[in-house]
Image (tube, rainbow, N blue to C red; front, side, top):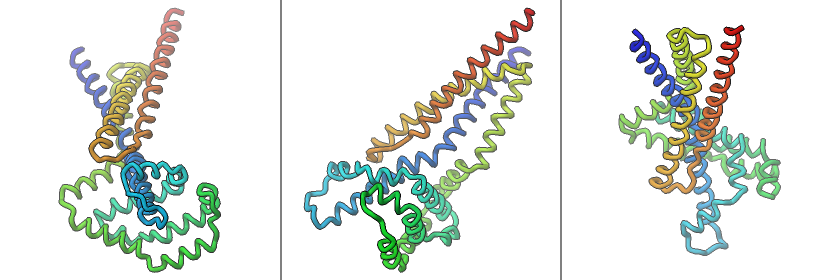
Length: 280
């Protein structure tokens, strides 16, 4: 019977490690995509566009030149702002959802969102770029974008892309949407809780599960840290993206590692107190 109990505990432990690892990936995947891929692409495209269209600069366009200009701190500062991140998050969601269902395109109005961002953050932008963003400039931009060409182009691109997607690609998009959903994350947390309850019942202890959770957290953290480094190396080497940020994933791994160590300390203190009570 003891060996059966040990096997069950091992299986519960492995399941706990897997649940913690999957939950950590789920809460960070969107952030990694936004910071590591989308923001870098947006930043590079903005720089390339201004570089190509410059009437002053007549130099030959090289990757070295592009990378040098891409280090513009003003663009980095704007892209790091909470408002821009929310805007990017919004359109990432719309893009993914529209690939599955075109009805989501009805809420798209890129020009309006950009102009609202400019109005709400003109002081911050003025400070970053070192030039006043006036109401006149915003009104002029509003008039120039009344045709909604950008929104129209975006919608047409999404529709064309959707029509060319294979069944497998659509399934992957649906899987991604489910994987980062709050519902899936809540289910994972419930799974972790149930796992710990069963572990505590089998161990017949009110505190031994702390050690189990601590070990699972430490192992999961190591897996997450290694995964974040491997993904970064693979993406930068295969895709050619110079900077691929996995900081959020790395941070989660470090937090889990520290939490695991703290729980080990709490467990040892609990055992000492338990032994003192038994002796007294």
